[in-house]
Length: 440
Picture 1 (cartoon, rainbow, N blue to C red):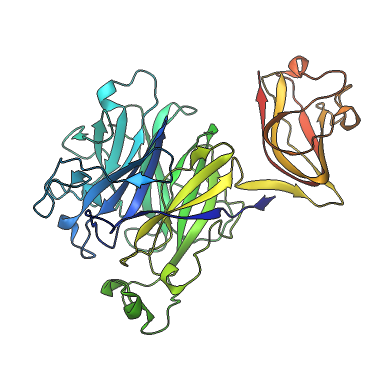
Picture 2 (picture 1 turned 90 degrees about the horizontal axis):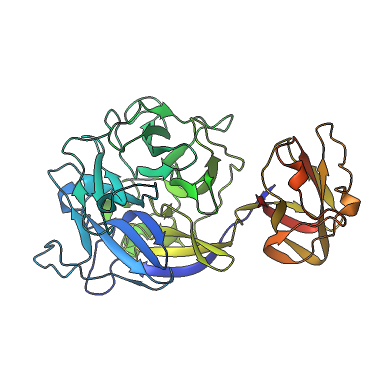
């Protein structure tokens, strides 16, 4: 198994560009795609590390995920003008806008006025908000819906179709408030108001690291799998030489001797429950070239990987934090291309665990070289090739496809094997296999 770093597609939204200059500490972004509209929410307006009263939640939108506009919404007066893109200001000093993070609720039967939901808040707890259009928000109830933690970063939530509950992944500490390592906890709810006691997330035998934000959400192609493109913070490292932060114009509190640490993006996955898998300890996205990319709290990913074109998906990352160049940057993978099973020219193979399935056809997302190929064998509960579904019966797959059916010469469909325990054997030559799916 190998991971794949995404392709840098460049900056798409500068926070201090144009009439709506929004500060140098814009972060905690959430990207939502609804049909042909992309929406992004982010914290803006911060003028000091503890100046919570100056913060607000800003909004931008796009038709292609590349070209973004900041609409003049006129909802709130900021710096004496309503000509801005602000959708939320700090209300009742509850610090909701410090980490306000929405999602589109696709649960069946949700009232239209509550189709968008969001959580935000700090020490007073997380407060719930609802909206019909994702722009005008109302508080669901006056008291917080989640309490008992610090919540001092972006806390993310969504409706889980596979678990049939709302899920929230939020900030915790391994040894109590501000002690030990930043880590992740989770809670669930049937109604977005009443939440279960927190569960601390376990990461198996992985070394303990600071997970600053988990950015966990259902994957758009397989919502039963939650993808976490988390921000890892390494607190004891400083890259910039003395004086370089001043030259770059970094905000004073993020200069050497102030708030130190550097961050990158790591990949985790889960299907729910109190554990996450960290197959790869190495980063999936490293900071870019140049000192300006190695400032504390930079390289924080936005919530959600979204589809931005045929065979393409995008992750957005906040960069040049605490600098005038503070912006949102786009990175892309091929669809399902976070990781793959890869074989060299000489060839290789792997066998899946035993499982049952429903469907009649097997589809693969894969690529081969001109000389490469993939063949698939279906094996029975004893690990033996099933008649007519052996590797020698399989028509080799060659090419570069995101959805291509596997065919066996005499029995191209798998209907007769449904609900029976099987496993798949893959034989690869100079090829990558990204994903598989059984379809009707």
